[in-house]
Image (cartoon, rainbow, N blue to C red; front, side, top):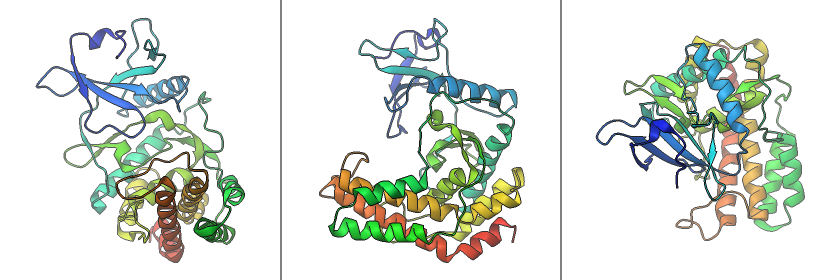
Length: 330
């Protein structure tokens, strides 16, 4: 049961959210027949309660810069979250009207997404905050490769692991961009858009962190520019969508020369990193969810997804020259 600790929620009707994500349980609260007023979430235990201090710090900073953002609703006692009788953590926040997209279906949407990400990054350029909830090693690509090598024991999975490891050994990118404030998970469903297609704000702020821009945007472009999605073994990197996303971003926050150099290899890096994580879970069989309607086991699904991300990394490498040219404004 949702804890009864938020005065503004009392008397409102509550229903399960249709666009609920895969991690946190999500409900919306409001007056029947009207748009929702608040979002209420049962927070996954993978996010420790101090994550709410991070969300509050970043969203307060965004609001002070005039950037739209959902804000946490403080409980009656002033806390940023509450626990139910079973100890689960709950929170409430503003509902931001708009549309959620689950795929980038056009260059126009990619351009708006790029501009929205850039507005967020520009707004937090001067933020001073030490994060309390830290996911250590989340994008330590070399460490993910070491763990894959240690976990892979044989068979089809070992052959795929060797291909991923070989691809990373011959990757020509750099890993030394400075850390900056990032959203941490810019998949398109974490961006809110108006009915006219303009970006409004970023959602799902549990992954806020200090990380490098190539990790942030490499992961975004890996997701936005692969029309086949993560469940296809033959991936394609869509340069038209990429060009639009880059143009939208650059119009708001131009890239430095150092950023352009690192970003040219960012999609390949993050695709290889995710391929390594999927492949490792094919041996450890414990982390990623899987589609039991399409695959006989989690192992089979993870091998399938690992092959797809390796295919995407190879596509990005083949098109590296075009990627670099577009980043330079060509």
